[in-house]
Image (tube, rainbow over all chains, first blue to last red; front, top):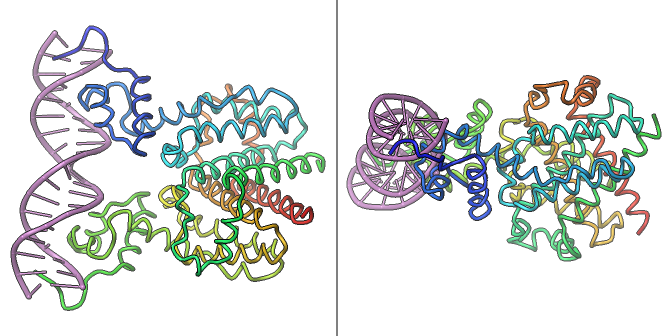
Length: 202
Length: 202
DNA sequence: ACCTGAACACCGTTCAAGT
DNA sequence: ACCTGAACACCGTTCAAGT
């Protein structure tokens, strides 16, 4: 067949298709992506750096939904909180992709730039330089830890033998609303209060 | 060949071998495990519920290093903190296994029992029942989020273009000691303070 | 009950051949 | 430059056949 007049494939379409498949089935393979695009498996390799390259594309695609403007609005602490919520929401929009994406943090240029701005806000707020990265990484830990929780099926807490863990069963039954959201907001509130105190102490 | 007089395989040896391989290479396959045990791939399937069953074995094996006694010693808050540190340390002992294990939380009976005891301590301390699970899940989020960070290679923060993110580069350079440990301890301290406040408010 | 050997469907990746 | 077809090494899983 040879080269077509206009390319059949591009990175955008590969990313979109792979994300669709992951949203539907929780996994993807290169042949599956190729088939859905009506193309041979090998063709995909002309546009993308193998399967890992596609995963990286997914990471960037999902992360592109993070509202980076949140970082510039309002006082540093509310800005950081809004950024964290938006970060988590971006993952939450593709729960089945989370296990694929959280195995290593997002380090795409667009996201690194957000870290740069977050660092800037903390420095400008008066944080001691050696404290800045721990403060940011702790927030990243919160977001990714919560994202994993978001990806875990509700059934994780379906206790096969309630009599073995009666108080756990009680506690689970007593939760109002979303366990996951409440846990995240709780951790975020604790984080913010502590980080504010850290600033005042320095 | 047929059945041997004494079994060549058991779940313990399969788990140990798989964990060894993961520690060395960051991944494992059923054929790799079989080969190292001097056995046919198919034989493994007589002892274990497929590849996923081996992953579950790894999860239990790694989690078995969590010192559950920490939950019973001292006041509820220091007990919870010690448990979280031990939980994180258990993962830290097998960093290359972390991506394999954190995709879904540990729900093996031995670990569920620890959750039961953690719930018990919180109830006894006087927490409102609907608050208990969010408090525990938030802690789990901290631990797993930090575990992911532990698994991420240091090189994640090697900035290819420092001039694009100068303040991030500064902040990274200023860190004293382990970024990861400091971030975890920071998040944990914030968590504890907030949870203590939650108890007093109720 | 437990191991083997063979089989099946699927995977990631490479590469020469075509336009 | 981009797509194909064929190939390679490897994977997870099943199953009849043996003891």
